[in-house]
Image (cartoon, rainbow, N blue to C red; front, top):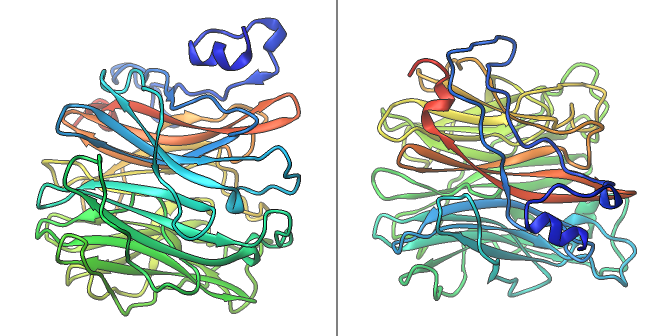
Length: 421
């Protein structure tokens, strides 16, 4: 029996296949830094969407939604490594978006099926799925056109990108068919978004946070926000250009004076109707921006209480409450690291005051050591009743090869609160 089949069956690998060591995918039951025996039990083992293979070594950045027939579906990136290509990089790898269905609430997943491909190049990636106010399914994803596979700009992956844009589509039949692509962003330049970032406001307005490369030398990337008031048929790009030039003391990464990083934003609607945006920086913490007009304009970014390496955070509102839930890489801020620290731990925290402060961090998953690839990162969140489905991807090693796999972990909402809601 080969390695892939053993993984598909969820079996322990025999000694002959032992080089493939999966990262830890079970959380610790206690808050970080404090034991609490009366807290909910430890989380179950996360379920991989599909086993990584040499041909498809990288699955990542997913998004979840419940269909009307009861199926839970999770869409995610599937990156291909053609055997003839030696100079391979995830950002310009041939990538499609696939999705798989679960009929047992995330305990197992069916065979992935093709969902979206690029209409203009080799890469469609970073999907977001959401139920729209009119009952339709909405989806957005990035189109990325790159240079020839054998001629990438290895010194900077950004230089290998000819164009990147975000598109939106809608479905009236639960994903069986989809509308043509509708551009959310301009069609030239570099405009993308992180996965799982669509938000439908109480008014029905759709919010899509974006990031746009403003300068390559010095490197500067900023956040823009687009919105739609007609269920995604047309989009308005808010004029606010959100940038952060702050860097952590002792920073040794790629950002030079005059540059900056503010990217991969997540937006939440608070109980008073205001919007709170959180995004990654190289300042050693996440930064906030706020909107008081449903996303039409945004205030100057400012430091949040959330210490973090340069890695994205996912922030949502807990249904039926005014509480916010944050999932982010809580560990290992390090100014000397190229990404201001390793992405070794994914944790959650609850805010009961609109993001002004956050409760204790609760560890969801910790990567194995030594850290493989990107570690654990890029969370998605989907609430369904009393369960939150948390997606993430994690690195693993097989001999001298590094792979990445997308996982989905069902977490009882009560777990995020520890011993008291």
